[in-house]
Length: 139
Length: 140
Length: 130
Image (cartoon, rainbow over all chains, first blue to last red):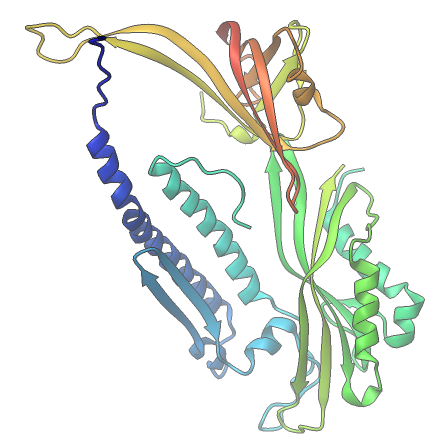
């Protein structure tokens, strides 16, 4: 009978690391997602004109986290948000002032898209730091 | 010929503004960001987002998202459904010829449809219908 | 000397193994020069001791599909190794890693620009110039 032996050392440590991986990724990943969402909101807020303050005041960020994921939503509940984003035609304000037409200003969409790209790059870095190989694109 | 990104913008506006079928629906033409005062039926083209995809030694391709929409005053009698459909037919998977570039793709990513109501006079309404169009062009 | 950008890196290849010519539409390369180590720790040593083995030269390339230059894919059919030359920055063209190599390739065609990747392994001695 053969007396050869194969000895794998470090398997218990590897198993422990793999079990902890989802929580570790969720924790760090959640911070990244929140950070980018908050940064996007700050950029958008700073870019809005400050007249009545409606656009700035109605911008909000909502964060949701769980053991396995993170989700952040940036939204603007102002009734003027669409007009600012997509442009408007000759119009009057509620007090009758003629504001004229306004070209589209995709501040919100552009900022969110730029931040999302940066977030995907950071999330890729996070996965690679945990020893995972990342291929393909997020979108 | 060296590539100039603004030529892409101009080519989009020109293509939409030169189409007889679209002009019949929206006679005030296609414009970048804003139509001239007094226009009541027109197309607006605007840049929403853009990113250059790099490669060693240069730019692999320019990736841009455009807002392209038909805009009309509610009392101007525009057929918005037909206008949006004509815009889509002119752009969806249709090559755009721009000096200094090779066309890669042009397609709609999302629809846009909204009604803009004047604050002081609610009878003044503007219809907006169109979409976000993804255009990728590689510098040649 | 200053730190340079990898944006101006180059990858050159010659299937005949003589004078490499630039592969186009690439956006990255990696070179690994890992060496195996053997543990020769003995009684009385105050820490682990190693001796190096052979250097293992290998790496990867990434980029976009461009039908005007399919050399990378042709290289996957080659029965003999070609000469591969990697430069971190074309502004310093004399600083290169080069040697004979076998190449393989992948292409990922999705709804965006098709992405190309490849890997290589040394088929002869590699040198860092100058």
